[in-house]
Length: 402
Image 1: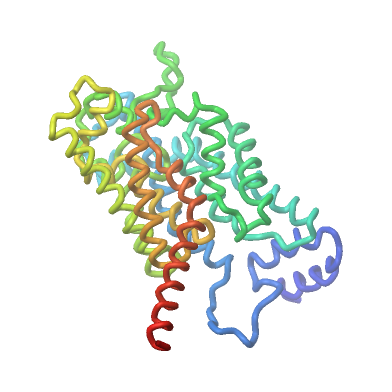
Image 2 (image 1 turned 45 degrees about the vertical axis):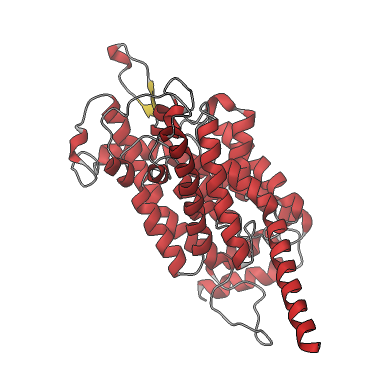
């Protein structure tokens, strides 16, 4: 008897029982869902929700692996144990030591994120008697990429419970939530534990206590340096693009994020309209601030000068604006659904992100706040886009009947 037949027999055994949703979730992870459409559909396709989620996870894996290498690289670089001149393809970056340091810090975040999040999903499925939804598959991967690498695991667990319950389950589960669950988790951490989520420091693991130095070292991120009008200490634009900079695990390598964006667009999982309009909005806001600085309306003594004077295009390769545009803003549930609405929705996300980044030097990263804000307004944007189309068509009907 094959594995598939054994699982089918177990499925029939648990059918109608309290734990059936939990078993069905494991069964459908490998095989087809319990309910599939056979006829009467307008569009037939091989993909389903699980395959769509897995596509996004595939696009995120390179960022995760690179982030692990970069965590170790930043650790050794901060201690002066390696040379930063090797670059992206240098031997000092792609080393086993770097990877092991990154795995030691990042992997527990992934385990806690998935373990706690899926436990809550299973619990709600059993209590409410519905099938376990696959929506957390992507959220579980996104969360470790957008939180500080040194965040205590118990804080992450509490935030995940809050994000899944308040951000999704209270609205009815996957497909019904109005806020991105991963960003809801990030927002909870930011407001509940602000000292751990300052946004301008990066943790670097250390093991040199015998030499009289601390076990951990906190150094400035690129945004933190700009916000404090500090120098970039030799970091060039190519380092920012390739990702050889301190920062959150998933957002440092803009190169891999662009590759992921192309993959999502090619598979038609991510909306190119939202991605492009978000970047246009960020560039527009950056140009406005550059104009203010060039006009002499703000001096170097101002606390806003550092980030205002950043070349407008450079905003795309520092911070997490690009990561947010590709993996967060394109969430098909919480984003605008109409084509024109996607342009408006994305543009405002980019525009507001840079505005928050500049006007809040204490926390110079506002992408998650901008996306959450526009999640709330996405239905309103779609409503007015649809009503404008209805009015235009009604006028056309009146002209023809006149």
